[in-house]
Length: 234
Image (cartoon, rainbow, N blue to C red; front, side, top):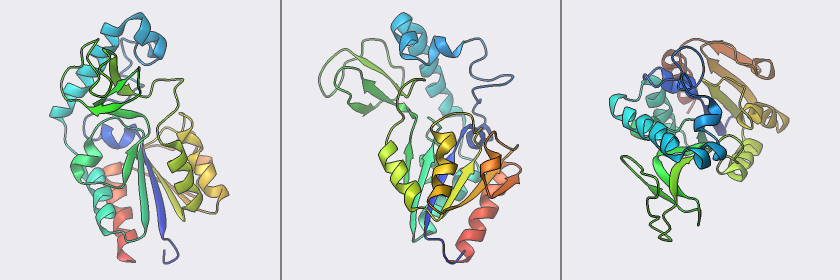
C-alpha cells in the first residue's frame, strides 16, 4: 500500500441501509407503493408537486431516527488520518457521512437537507418540510424544489469526480448496486487511469467483474477493517 497516495471512495445505498435507511429497490424499498416515474423525475414534479415534495419531506424527517454506523465512522476516520488526497463520493442523499465527521466528500445525487431553485439554480440548506412554492433566498422566486438529482438529470460535480478518478491510485466502491450510471462506470474510469480497484459489498454488484478485488460482507465490518489496513501503512 506504500504507493497509494490518492484515494476515491464511492458509497451507495448499502452503507446507509445498515443504519436503517431503506434502499430504493426490493421488498420494503422506498419505491414500494410509488413508481420511480411518480416521485423522481422532472415530469413527476411538474405533474404532482405535492406528492413529490411530500415524498422527500418524509425521507428527510426519517433522518432524525437514524445514526451513522461503523462504516460511516470508519470513512470519517480515514478522512481525518489520511495525509494523501481523498474524495468520498456518495450517491446517498442522507447526511450520515457528515454526521460521522467526514469532510472531504460530495453528494453527487443531491441532499435531503437542501433545496434547489428551479429559476436561478441556487442551492440552500433546508431543514423541515419544503412546501410547494417556497421562496428562494437568492432570487426570491417561489420555485424551490427538493435538491435531489432526478432520473434524467446530470449528477453534481462530475468534473471534480472525473478529475479525482484520473489521479486516483485506489478506487473503492462500498455498498453500491453497480446499476446506476454514471457512478457504475467509475471503476472502469479509475482502472483506465491505472488505479487499483476494490469492491466492498454485501453481495457482488452488477459491476463486480470490473474490480480487481471484491470482498463480500456487511459494510459495518468490511469498511473498518479496510481502513485499518490503509492507515496501518501511514
